[in-house]
Length: 239
Image (cartoon, rainbow, N blue to C red; front, side, top):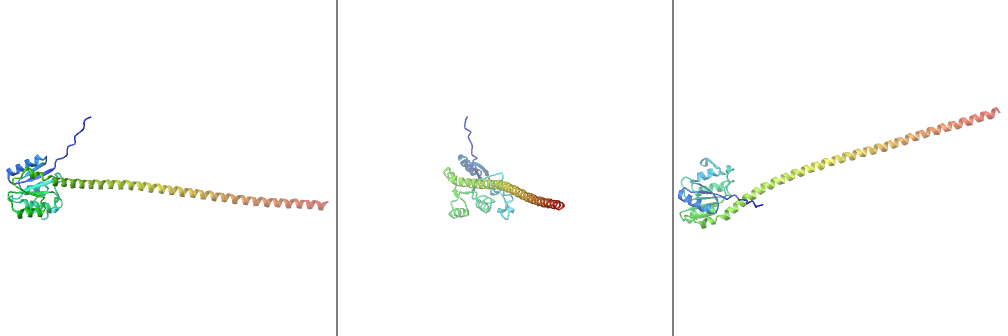
């Protein structure tokens, strides 16, 4: 019998860049490492893909939930984009309770230290200068693995909670059965005690009844003796 190969689900990276050329380049580099890639051309589309719609009208992004049908392990985004910049996208992701743990990497053609530091302070994992190289993409694996482990741990926590709940339910059922069995044993013991007490009472009653009959017999015997004596006395007088 041959062994069945189990294929692992590839890690999912969301790539965001308004430049079609740069978007295709980063997509190709990511696929070289066997990542599953979704590419969009704006920050708004990225948030929509993550399940955050109507981003311009949102007062608190943390009140929204991510797309339950999509699991994204990392976001890699260009810094300079029309509408919503990569820095603004980074901030919205990190401000979200549901998305803040997703690693974010920023790309830019401009080597501006202040910009780089600002992105890193805001929570970006890396800041790559364009054109992005294969060696740059190779640096992403630890962040992706870390995020995957966190997701797995959360799933295990949910599974463990479910197992504990099932275990407690089973033990509660066992406790109920033990309690019911204990109640039955107590009832049997009480019934047995009642029967024993009744037997004792019956024995006492029979003993008292026998004593009464014995006293009656003694009285009858005494009367018989007196009659015999009287008869003998009468006979002697007549002689």
